[in-house]
Length: 400
Image (cartoon, rainbow, N blue to C red):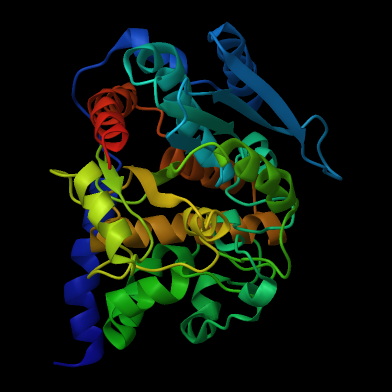
């Protein structure tokens, strides 16, 4: 069988699957919980600050993030200490700016509805809101410098010498030149080009190459930077100070995008330490935990949750990424749609759009990718959070 025939057999069913993903979504809607999902960064921040002020014993703070393009950008925090400090849970949102909409909603749900019912005797809580406020406000994943913050954190700058050979090989696919035209032949046939690369490199190799992080193409997707972004110097003293009284620390880093739509995925980076893995298995027993080095997943460089463990070396540490799936990107068709959304949004930011219609379409797809408007999806986010959080907190509080 020749290559063109093979491509057609694989690509056209994928094109059909991608088209079908645009259909409706059915399920229960909890109107009371829709209050947590705000329309802007500023609304989300205002509500976070207000809730923190209303929490007994809570201490809030704001860390100013400098910008040449936007004013009044802050990382906001809310700390609720334990009476007898033993264990600290750090809950973060907005590391990938636009993902902060859902992350903020989940944080505020936790603060308003769950915090009063979980352990406070020995377990403290630190909420860090909107680590990337620039991306949050402008509805991008990256910072003003086009840096993916989840590829930018480490304890030494050796990170920026990392080389991603696989990314170089597919750079042309990931970062095309020219203005964006959604209806162009290149964009219409993107799934075919993607399938060709899957056949050539394998899905696992392609996913690893694209998503690992890269430090050579400043205008490319998944750029980890050439130096640490300001967030590191802002957050690091806070992490050290707040964790000081505690012996155990767990990070819950909130994200959206990867995985089955409406499902909460537990997605830490590769974990080699046997004690950490054992504690993860205890706290998350009964849930599927997909480590970055297992089949069909990927490892990243400059990972924030991994960095916290490197920073707090005297603590017993548990890292965890909570990822609320949106586009079924665990499937081939969903994965292709996801990476294409990333590509055209980045291409349009740097090169512009052929028309206002192209701009609006790309922005709409990108927002739906990371912040679905579906009230069914949003109801599922809160429902699964309400199920998981109390159980995880209880198990973490009982670790010896």
